[in-house]
Amino acid sequence: MSNKNLTIDAELDKLQRLSFSYFLHETNRANGLVVDKTATGWSASIAATGMALASYPVAVERGFMTRSAAIERTLITLRFFWNSPQGPQPDSTGYKGFYYHFLDMQTGQRAWKCELSTVDTAFLLAGALTAGMYFSTNTKDENEIRNLADALYRRADWQWAQNGGTTVTHGWKPESGFIQYRWEGYDEAMLLYILGLGSPDHPLPESSYNPAWTSTYRWEHCYGYDYLYAGPLFTHQLSHIWIDFRNIQDAFMRIKGIDYFENSRRATYVQQKYAIDNPFNFKGYDECCWGITASDGPGPNTMKIDGIERHFFDYIGRGVPYGPDDGTLAPWAVVASLPFAHEIVLPTLDFCINQINLTNSNPYGFKATFNPTYSEKSNSPYGWISPWHYGINQGPIVLMIENYRTELVWQLMRNCSYIIIGLHRAGFKGGWL
Image 1: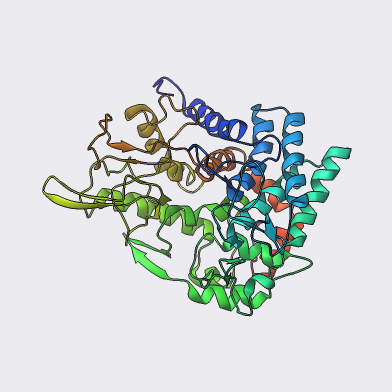
Image 2: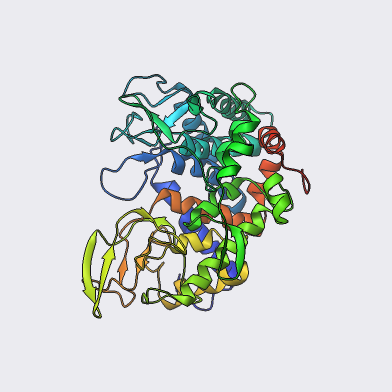
C-alpha cells in the first residue's frame, strides 16, 4: 500500500479491504467467532465478532464478499450465540443475555476466567442489529437473521446488570458476582445505555442515563477546545460507529450548545494539538503523527533513552492530555476519526501509509501500534511496531471509512426502532430524530 500514486479514494479502498480481510481469515467458520488478536492460541473477542457482523454488509456493498457468503457467515454467528449455553455455570458462553468478553475459539466457552462483559455485549448486539437491518428481503435466511438478531437483543437483561444501582455495572463473574466498577464518566458506554434504554423486555430506567450517567461527565478545556473529556481516542468513536449523533442533542448537550459528533471532532483535534505540543518530547509526534488510545505497547519496560528514563507499558488505556502516554501511537484510532475531522485524518493516513510504510507487507493493513521512541532492538527507523493485529481495531477502520464515504451503518441504524426508542428515552431531540 506504499504506492504514492494512489488517490485518496484508492488508499481508502485498499485500507478498508485489507482491514476487512481480518474477518475473512481470522474467524472460525463453524461458529462465527473472531479471534481477538493474531497471536497463536488466542481466544475470540465478542466485541470483534460484533464488528464482523456489522462489517459484512459493508463488504457486500464494496464487493469484498458475496451477499450469499455474508448471509452464511451471519447466520452461523447468530445461531451460535442464540444456541450456546446461557447460565451461571463458569464454563457457559453467557448469562442473562450477556456474553463473556473472551470465548474459546473452538468451543465458544468462557476463556481465561474473564468477566461477563456488558459493554462488549453491547458491541456484539449492535453488530447483530446492523445485520438485521441490512438483510431485509423476504427470504428464509434473511428472515432468520432478523429474527435471531431481534431475539438476541431482547434477551439481554439490562435491569439485572444494574445490580440494584442507578448505573450499569461493567460485568459479572460466576465466582465473585458483580464487578465493583460501573459505567460512569463519559466513554464508549453511550451505546450500551442507548441499547439498554431501547429494550422492549428488560429496559434500563430513563434515570440510569440522566441524571445517573450524565452527572458523572467531566467537561474540560484543553488545547483551546471545550469538550466532554475522555482520554483514550476510542472512547469518542465506538458508539459513533452505529449512531449518527450529528444535530441531535440530549439535555446535557443542549446546555453546552453542541452535539456528541462535534464533541468527538474536538477530541480528535485535541489529540493532534497534544502531539504537536508533545509535552514529554517523544520521538515522531507532530501534526501528521498522532493517535493515542487503549492499545498494546512495547512494555512493560523501563530504559534510559537520550538521558531520559522512560517507562513503557503493554496493553493499557493510553489517553490525552493526562496520560498515560509512553510514546505509543495507534494508526487505526486515527482512521476511526475520519468522519469527524477528515481534514486532519487524511494527511495523517497518507503519512502512515506512504512515509513510514506502516501497512507494508501487513496482510490486514495497519498493525495495532508503533512507538518511534522505543527504538531499541527495532529494525524500523520508526521504532517498535506491534507484531499483532486486533479485531477491535480492524472493525472501526472498516466501519468508519464506510460512514465517512456513504454513511451506510448510520443509515441502517437510523431505521432501527430500538436505537430510536433508546435515544428518545435518553432525551435526544432534533436532527434526523
